[in-house]
Length: 363
Image (tube, rainbow, N blue to C red; front, side):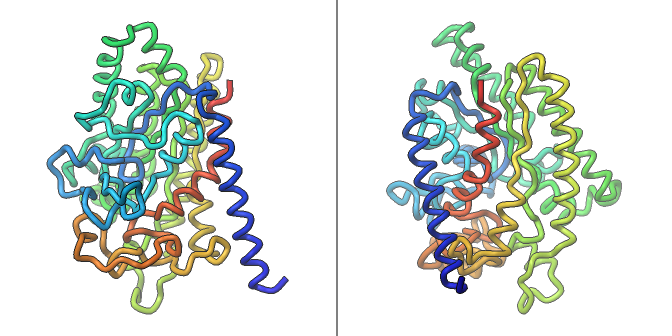
């Protein structure tokens, strides 16, 4: 096969995956045993909660949302959907996962699931303080509040059943390392990278326990991405970012080590709770993102180390704004800004995660 033939083959394969996922989503509509979807975490899972708090970590302005329905900037840190939106649609629950803090949500939207995630948050309690955003513990408090609101409408018994049959997703951790540990030197004074990893994983375990105590039984926990491939990390920590835009292996190795420990921890928790109906799994975003950044041609990407917005090297949040240059076609880019994937990349991640999602939700 020529290189052009190989490229066309992978494009056809990706198109086939998309068509199959769309067909499955249509077949799943109204049939899935999953009652609702609840999401916790950071900007990879925040559909707009930060719109309603006092923080500079917002994205409710153009060019964010450029390829969303009606080109609306919702507060999602991308040009379109998040992976959670693709998962919700696949399960036949809803087209988009809304932010819990949206005061205009109707009870039907609440009942089928919401996201409590807040861009800039993390497992380390210090991380959300840096950005003045919603901590994981506060997100869990909002979930308790959510349960009370829903119980007032449908009753406690139905609410308990709703929670028991829901899918819970937790996506956080990148800010703990990229923003907190490496950019702000407070934690580095008292922790090595190994002991800090263990410190964060202790907080992951606490979140798992809290969710379990609140009724969650189907839980997916997202691991770290290849942090050394994030454009902002390349820009800040590469020896010569103007010339060398390759991934920084040392940062990605930290993510690999964290992910390995996370998998062991989640497997242990799953085995300990299996008899009680728990289904807890690791969601691997590292592998698909490494593949996209190292072999972009397979997915028809032209740019793998810079974002679509501005220079793509440093812009994110308020630095990616209506005055920023934006690439003509975001589907040619792995990253939308210097940190966050494009809609297309999130769809590819979803397709990779689909078998694990199926495992978590199976009866």
